[in-house]
Length: 129
Image (cartoon, rainbow, N blue to C red; front, side, top):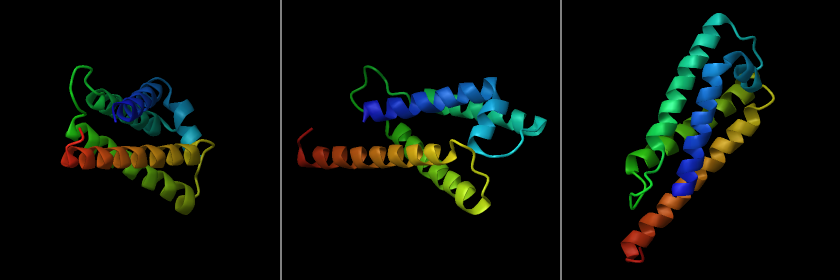
């Protein structure tokens, strides 16, 4: 679970930094729209939020387990972003070159977090862990 959460946290923090530095490069990769000044500032705002999410969900090095709050946050975030990207691509039809790849990545991460957490809970109940 630590590795999955660490990967997701690092990916979101990296995306956040990229959005803060160059929203006019990142945004068109996800949606096929011109980046206005407002979109660039909103992209930077989202970048700050993603960096914060990544930092908040980074697993503690010395803790025995992953924080339930970090688990819920990353599961919710990845699930909702996958649904949003799917909607933007399928219904709104403004997919950029990386939108479907990003949507798929978020689906995979959400499933891995959900399955791994479920397996950990079952092992805890059975007294294995």
